[in-house]
Image (cartoon, rainbow, N blue to C red; front, side, top):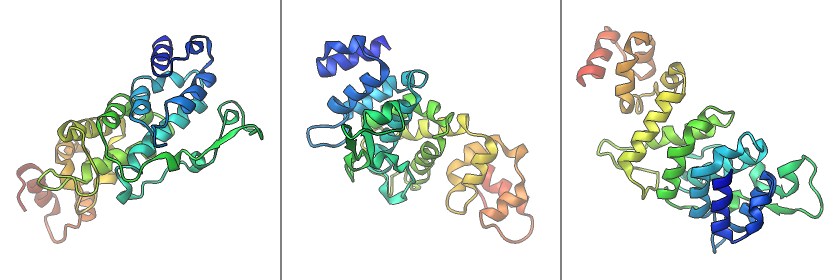
Length: 247
């Protein structure tokens, strides 16, 4: 945690951070780094979490869950609101510091609505991209994986044939964003889960490289039906679509 403490000190000027426990550091972050001058989730917070969020996992699971959810909402609500991605609503009324330590809020706590601190709309920028690059694999291995899965899949599925985003607001490097979204999804999720998610008429072809790699393990007839294929010779016709891009 030493490098986290140092970065928090650099951002806040509070030298007491070097002697603080994880919960106290989290409270300092909430009060001094989480929001920008307009009261919205800041790029400084996103960058801090990109580099250090995983360090809270074994120190304070509750802090890790809270910060991970706030960062994902910054992306899913801020840049991808058209997709109505579900999120953990506990962020809408969160008592600090009590909820960082116990389940019993105090009348002295400050109650935050972190969800309303997400600016809508706001682009998926370099700070958000840094968070996805460094933290996606940790979140996909946790009970929070559904929110991250929805984010990454919609990033891939939102692209048009001209490789432009339709509904996601992006200012970060689009090629790199698409690459890491696919890499983490295909690496971290069970193949059958991915196949179930992509077996839709207007989505499957955006994941052709994955389908090619998993071809021997796919129920070809079932997959063909799910993507809207009708008539005879479904396996043969699906093969032509997947490997030769022909009907």
